[in-house]
Image 1 (cartoon, helix red, strand yellow):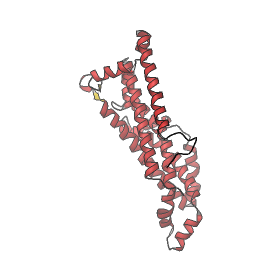
Image 2: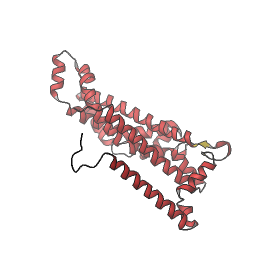
Image 3: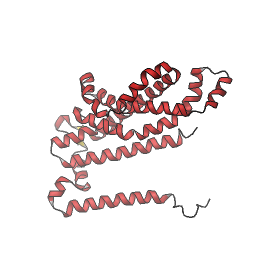
Image 4: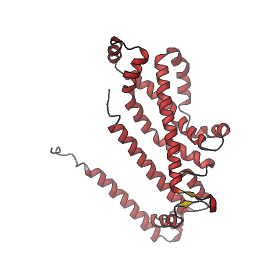
Length: 265
Protein backbone atom coordinates (compact mmCIF):
# COMPACT_ATOMS: atom_id res chain seq x y z
CA UNK A 1 0.00 0.00 0.00
CA UNK A 2 1.38 3.37 -1.04
CA UNK A 3 1.17 6.28 1.35
CA UNK A 4 -0.79 9.28 0.19
CA UNK A 5 1.13 12.15 -1.32
CA UNK A 6 1.99 14.81 1.22
CA UNK A 7 1.85 12.48 4.24
CA UNK A 8 5.20 11.99 6.01
CA UNK A 9 6.52 8.43 6.40
CA UNK A 10 5.60 6.68 9.63
CA UNK A 11 9.19 6.62 10.89
CA UNK A 12 9.79 10.36 10.50
CA UNK A 13 8.16 11.58 13.76
CA UNK A 14 10.06 8.96 15.78
CA UNK A 15 13.41 9.78 14.19
CA UNK A 16 12.81 13.52 14.58
CA UNK A 17 11.99 13.08 18.25
CA UNK A 18 15.11 11.05 18.95
CA UNK A 19 17.29 13.50 17.03
CA UNK A 20 15.87 16.40 19.05
CA UNK A 21 16.58 14.53 22.29
CA UNK A 22 20.10 13.74 21.13
CA UNK A 23 20.74 17.41 20.32
CA UNK A 24 19.56 18.46 23.78
CA UNK A 25 21.87 15.92 25.43
CA UNK A 26 24.82 17.02 23.29
CA UNK A 27 24.29 20.70 24.14
CA UNK A 28 23.85 19.83 27.81
CA UNK A 29 27.06 17.78 27.84
CA UNK A 30 29.01 20.46 25.98
CA UNK A 31 27.76 23.27 28.23
CA UNK A 32 28.67 21.33 31.37
CA UNK A 33 32.26 20.76 30.23
CA UNK A 34 32.99 24.06 28.52
CA UNK A 35 31.58 26.52 31.06
CA UNK A 36 33.85 25.67 33.98
CA UNK A 37 33.15 23.95 37.26
CA UNK A 38 30.46 26.43 38.40
CA UNK A 39 27.83 25.37 35.86
CA UNK A 40 28.82 21.72 36.12
CA UNK A 41 28.24 21.87 39.87
CA UNK A 42 24.77 23.38 39.46
CA UNK A 43 23.71 21.52 36.31
CA UNK A 44 26.01 18.49 36.00
CA UNK A 45 26.23 16.97 32.51
CA UNK A 46 24.84 13.48 31.95
CA UNK A 47 28.26 11.82 31.83
CA UNK A 48 29.10 13.25 35.26
CA UNK A 49 26.02 12.24 37.22
CA UNK A 50 25.70 8.88 35.47
CA UNK A 51 29.30 8.08 36.37
CA UNK A 52 28.73 9.17 39.97
CA UNK A 53 25.64 6.97 40.30
CA UNK A 54 27.41 3.99 38.70
CA UNK A 55 30.30 4.35 41.16
CA UNK A 56 27.81 4.13 44.03
CA UNK A 57 26.52 0.78 42.70
CA UNK A 58 23.20 2.47 41.92
CA UNK A 59 22.43 2.99 45.59
CA UNK A 60 21.48 6.21 47.36
CA UNK A 61 21.83 7.00 51.03
CA UNK A 62 24.43 6.52 53.71
CA UNK A 63 25.75 3.27 55.13
CA UNK A 64 23.25 0.60 56.04
CA UNK A 65 20.37 2.92 55.13
CA UNK A 66 21.38 3.05 51.47
CA UNK A 67 18.51 2.14 49.14
CA UNK A 68 18.74 0.60 45.68
CA UNK A 69 17.64 2.92 42.90
CA UNK A 70 15.85 0.00 41.25
CA UNK A 71 13.85 -0.60 44.43
CA UNK A 72 13.00 3.10 44.62
CA UNK A 73 11.67 3.10 41.06
CA UNK A 74 9.57 0.00 41.73
CA UNK A 75 8.22 1.52 44.95
CA UNK A 76 7.06 4.63 43.12
CA UNK A 77 5.48 2.55 40.35
CA UNK A 78 3.67 0.38 42.90
CA UNK A 79 2.25 3.41 44.72
CA UNK A 80 1.07 5.25 41.64
CA UNK A 81 -0.44 2.15 40.02
CA UNK A 82 -2.19 1.15 43.26
CA UNK A 83 -3.69 4.61 43.66
CA UNK A 84 -4.77 4.82 40.02
CA UNK A 85 -6.24 1.31 40.00
CA UNK A 86 -8.24 1.97 43.16
CA UNK A 87 -9.44 5.30 41.78
CA UNK A 88 -10.44 3.72 38.46
CA UNK A 89 -12.48 0.95 40.10
CA UNK A 90 -14.05 3.30 42.65
CA UNK A 91 -14.95 5.85 39.97
CA UNK A 92 -16.67 3.24 37.79
CA UNK A 93 -18.58 1.83 40.78
CA UNK A 94 -19.60 5.32 41.90
CA UNK A 95 -20.73 6.10 38.39
CA UNK A 96 -22.82 2.93 38.39
CA UNK A 97 -24.46 3.90 41.67
CA UNK A 98 -25.23 7.42 40.51
CA UNK A 99 -26.57 6.28 37.15
CA UNK A 100 -28.92 3.78 38.78
CA UNK A 101 -30.21 6.07 41.53
CA UNK A 102 -31.48 9.61 41.15
CA UNK A 103 -31.35 10.12 44.90
CA UNK A 104 -27.66 9.19 44.90
CA UNK A 105 -27.04 11.62 42.05
CA UNK A 106 -28.80 14.45 43.86
CA UNK A 107 -26.95 13.66 47.09
CA UNK A 108 -23.41 12.93 45.91
CA UNK A 109 -23.18 14.94 42.69
CA UNK A 110 -22.59 18.34 44.35
CA UNK A 111 -20.06 16.83 46.75
CA UNK A 112 -18.05 15.32 43.90
CA UNK A 113 -17.98 18.60 41.99
CA UNK A 114 -16.95 20.46 45.14
CA UNK A 115 -14.01 18.15 45.90
CA UNK A 116 -12.80 17.60 42.31
CA UNK A 117 -10.94 20.95 41.98
CA UNK A 118 -8.87 20.36 45.14
CA UNK A 119 -5.26 19.62 44.20
CA UNK A 120 -4.00 16.27 45.51
CA UNK A 121 -1.09 17.99 47.24
CA UNK A 122 -3.59 19.80 49.47
CA UNK A 123 -4.60 16.43 50.93
CA UNK A 124 -1.09 15.65 52.21
CA UNK A 125 -1.47 17.17 55.73
CA UNK A 126 -4.77 15.35 56.25
CA UNK A 127 -3.32 12.09 54.94
CA UNK A 128 -0.33 12.31 57.28
CA UNK A 129 -2.58 12.92 60.28
CA UNK A 130 -4.85 9.99 59.39
CA UNK A 131 -2.38 7.45 57.98
CA UNK A 132 1.01 8.66 59.18
CA UNK A 133 4.05 8.70 56.89
CA UNK A 134 4.10 5.60 54.73
CA UNK A 135 2.85 3.86 51.62
CA UNK A 136 -0.80 4.35 52.52
CA UNK A 137 -0.38 8.12 52.48
CA UNK A 138 1.22 8.08 49.03
CA UNK A 139 -1.49 5.80 47.60
CA UNK A 140 -4.20 7.95 49.18
CA UNK A 141 -2.78 11.12 47.60
CA UNK A 142 -2.78 9.51 44.16
CA UNK A 143 -6.31 8.22 44.71
CA UNK A 144 -7.64 11.65 45.70
CA UNK A 145 -5.98 13.26 42.71
CA UNK A 146 -7.70 10.95 40.23
CA UNK A 147 -10.94 9.64 41.75
CA UNK A 148 -13.20 12.69 41.60
CA UNK A 149 -12.29 13.66 38.05
CA UNK A 150 -12.71 10.07 36.86
CA UNK A 151 -16.10 9.82 38.55
CA UNK A 152 -17.35 12.95 36.82
CA UNK A 153 -15.96 11.62 33.54
CA UNK A 154 -17.72 8.29 34.12
CA UNK A 155 -21.05 10.06 34.51
CA UNK A 156 -20.43 12.01 31.30
CA UNK A 157 -19.57 8.80 29.43
CA UNK A 158 -22.71 7.10 30.75
CA UNK A 159 -24.85 9.94 29.41
CA UNK A 160 -23.27 9.41 25.97
CA UNK A 161 -24.35 5.77 25.73
CA UNK A 162 -26.99 5.55 22.96
CA UNK A 163 -30.46 4.96 24.39
CA UNK A 164 -31.13 2.48 21.60
CA UNK A 165 -28.56 0.09 23.10
CA UNK A 166 -30.35 0.13 26.44
CA UNK A 167 -33.74 -0.30 24.79
CA UNK A 168 -32.59 -3.35 22.84
CA UNK A 169 -31.07 -4.87 25.97
CA UNK A 170 -34.32 -4.28 27.85
CA UNK A 171 -36.34 -5.87 25.07
CA UNK A 172 -34.10 -8.92 25.35
CA UNK A 173 -35.00 -9.24 29.02
CA UNK A 174 -32.06 -7.54 30.73
CA UNK A 175 -32.83 -5.78 34.00
CA UNK A 176 -31.17 -2.53 35.10
CA UNK A 177 -28.01 -4.07 36.66
CA UNK A 178 -27.59 -6.38 33.66
CA UNK A 179 -27.95 -3.49 31.22
CA UNK A 180 -25.30 -1.60 33.14
CA UNK A 181 -22.92 -4.57 33.24
CA UNK A 182 -23.26 -5.73 29.63
CA UNK A 183 -24.07 -2.48 27.80
CA UNK A 184 -23.04 0.60 29.74
CA UNK A 185 -19.78 -0.67 31.24
CA UNK A 186 -18.19 -1.80 27.94
CA UNK A 187 -19.34 1.45 26.32
CA UNK A 188 -17.71 3.73 28.91
CA UNK A 189 -14.45 1.88 29.62
CA UNK A 190 -12.40 3.29 26.69
CA UNK A 191 -13.37 6.89 27.44
CA UNK A 192 -12.78 6.61 31.19
CA UNK A 193 -9.42 4.91 30.63
CA UNK A 194 -8.38 7.65 28.21
CA UNK A 195 -9.03 10.24 30.90
CA UNK A 196 -7.13 8.08 33.39
CA UNK A 197 -4.15 8.25 31.05
CA UNK A 198 -4.57 12.01 30.76
CA UNK A 199 -4.56 12.34 34.55
CA UNK A 200 -1.52 10.09 34.96
CA UNK A 201 0.81 13.11 34.99
CA UNK A 202 -1.10 14.62 37.91
CA UNK A 203 -1.00 11.28 39.74
CA UNK A 204 2.72 10.93 39.00
CA UNK A 205 3.49 14.36 40.43
CA UNK A 206 1.27 13.69 43.44
CA UNK A 207 3.08 10.49 44.42
CA UNK A 208 6.47 12.19 44.03
CA UNK A 209 5.44 15.01 46.35
CA UNK A 210 4.07 12.49 48.84
CA UNK A 211 7.41 10.65 48.78
CA UNK A 212 9.27 13.89 49.38
CA UNK A 213 7.35 14.41 52.61
CA UNK A 214 9.24 11.73 54.50
CA UNK A 215 9.38 8.32 52.82
CA UNK A 216 12.76 6.64 52.71
CA UNK A 217 12.37 5.17 49.24
CA UNK A 218 10.86 6.21 45.94
CA UNK A 219 11.93 8.67 43.27
CA UNK A 220 10.67 11.64 45.28
CA UNK A 221 12.80 10.52 48.23
CA UNK A 222 15.85 10.42 45.94
CA UNK A 223 15.36 14.08 45.07
CA UNK A 224 15.02 15.04 48.73
CA UNK A 225 18.07 13.00 49.67
CA UNK A 226 20.08 14.79 47.00
CA UNK A 227 18.91 18.13 48.36
CA UNK A 228 19.79 17.21 51.95
CA UNK A 229 23.24 15.99 50.90
CA UNK A 230 23.82 18.95 48.53
CA UNK A 231 24.39 16.32 45.83
CA UNK A 232 23.38 17.79 42.47
CA UNK A 233 24.48 14.63 40.67
CA UNK A 234 21.84 12.69 42.59
CA UNK A 235 19.20 15.37 42.01
CA UNK A 236 19.78 15.46 38.26
CA UNK A 237 19.83 11.67 38.03
CA UNK A 238 16.54 11.51 39.94
CA UNK A 239 14.97 14.09 37.64
CA UNK A 240 16.05 12.16 34.54
CA UNK A 241 14.70 8.88 35.92
CA UNK A 242 11.42 10.57 36.88
CA UNK A 243 10.98 11.96 33.37
CA UNK A 244 11.96 8.71 31.66
CA UNK A 245 9.76 6.58 33.92
CA UNK A 246 6.76 8.83 33.40
CA UNK A 247 7.30 8.74 29.64
CA UNK A 248 7.42 4.93 29.59
CA UNK A 249 4.30 4.57 31.72
CA UNK A 250 2.42 6.98 29.48
CA UNK A 251 3.41 4.88 26.48
CA UNK A 252 2.21 1.75 28.29
CA UNK A 253 -1.16 3.33 29.03
CA UNK A 254 -1.37 4.46 25.42
CA UNK A 255 -0.73 0.88 24.29
CA UNK A 256 -3.57 -0.38 26.51
CA UNK A 257 -5.92 2.30 25.18
CA UNK A 258 -5.05 1.57 21.55
CA UNK A 259 -4.85 -2.22 21.45
CA UNK A 260 -6.90 -3.49 24.42
CA UNK A 261 -9.65 -0.90 24.96
CA UNK A 262 -9.75 -0.05 21.27
CA UNK A 263 -13.49 0.11 20.58
CA UNK A 264 -15.58 3.25 20.35
CA UNK A 265 -19.32 3.75 20.80
